[in-house]
Image (cartoon, rainbow, N blue to C red; front, side, top):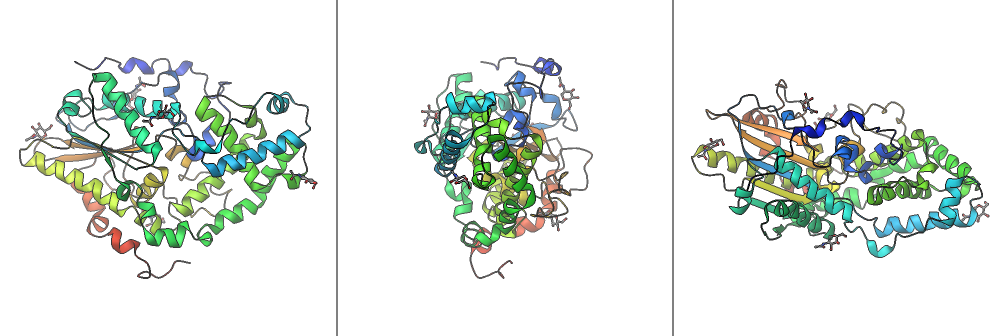
Length: 453
Ligand SMILES: *[C@@H]1O[C@H](CO)[C@@H](O)[C@H](O)[C@H]1NC(C)=O
Ligand SMILES: *[C@@H]1O[C@H](CO)[C@@H](O)[C@H](O)[C@H]1NC(C)=O
Ligand SMILES: *[C@@H]1O[C@H](CO)[C@@H](O)[C@H](O)[C@H]1NC(C)=O
Ligand SMILES: *[C@@H]1O[C@H](CO)[C@@H](O)[C@H](O)[C@H]1NC(C)=O
Ligand SMILES: *[C@@H]1O[C@H](CO)[C@@H](O)[C@H](O)[C@H]1NC(C)=O
């Protein structure tokens, strides 16, 4: 059975999409950071969720053949966690009891909208999240038809590895369902592996020095108390007509989540979104970026080093495929699908040097960081994915193409940038120090390193 020909026509009506003035889409939807919809980073998907454009791959020669693909994918859209549900309930209570404006959107929240988020939802995957992964699987099968193929899946040349969290297990099943529905095959779940996909909770030094250490995120706290954030809170209070002291930074955050979740989960532009204008949303986005920066990104060296185990795992799969191909054997693991969290992807992207601004993100440089590359809204929406595709281009020439969220990216600092598909040897040379070091056990043990201040 061959793949359905859902080809490049998909892009033709892109210009007709009224995005970003579509009234169904909140004007602030592109600032939702890790609560953002995948479609916001690839707006052509709004029109056709299965659209792909194979010409973005552009191998340097017609001889190049894909021999291996590793996909590291964040789980799909999910419900809020208990902590956020509690904050949202508190905000809802305030709006119900104290807000006194007469605007129709406010009346709508007070009289029609009901607080349907409950604590037992606890971060579970929602139906939209199931679809995120099902559709991603179909698109990847169209983008890489010689690898993500019925023949290779039937031949047992796929490996699935997932974090044990229900939202990841469910995402993995949904990704597979996307393929098995296409080809009418059955496959098992794959392997649960938290050492690999939730390395961040196994890395003692990270847990102690960053995750459980409030002083690691001082900049985030300072920003939340700072003038930009205070202004956002005051504007929310003005819109609700409640005293300024009623709207805390947690409430502002909860209001932002309300708008983001209603959109991500139900695809509605809810009245909660009216509590923010674009300037406010940019401040909220920065607060979220700051948190990710200090907890998972460049803020502390151990953040990225905690992903050493995944880094080596990726390169050892690539090496194995390369050497099998070179020695005339069939590549035994053509496709590896690894499902984890934003907290899995961000440290790895950081280790690889992506989105590294010359200035650190701090509580005081919001204005000068307006052009920063470190934007979690672009990097880490639901179902965010890093793909590493290995090509054999004949005559022992192997090339590696990285794609983030289905768009080719270039390895930062790799000098030969004419092609988005550098020689695999050059990539390995570029990351030589990490390949020779970056030992998880060493990096993650306590007291071996001077404490960062
Ligand atoms: C597909 O991608 C190529 C290369 O980026 C671009 O030139 C072309 O316009 C795209 N095609 C469509 C239909 O969008
Ligand atoms: C996955 O999530 C969907 C939506 O919440 C749910 O209907 C389904 O039962 C879940 N599947 C599994 C296997 O957990
Ligand atoms: C809101 O502020 C008023 C005046 O400071 C205070 O009396 C009231 O308790 C506050 N309400 C909430 C829900 O914080
Ligand atoms: C190595 O990969 C190339 C490209 O797919 C293929 O032509 C060649 O047959 C492969 N070698 C082996 C031994 O599989
Ligand atoms: C990030 O950028 C800083 C400053 O430009 C540089 O010192 C550092 O080595 C970079 N980190 C990575 C992982 O590329």
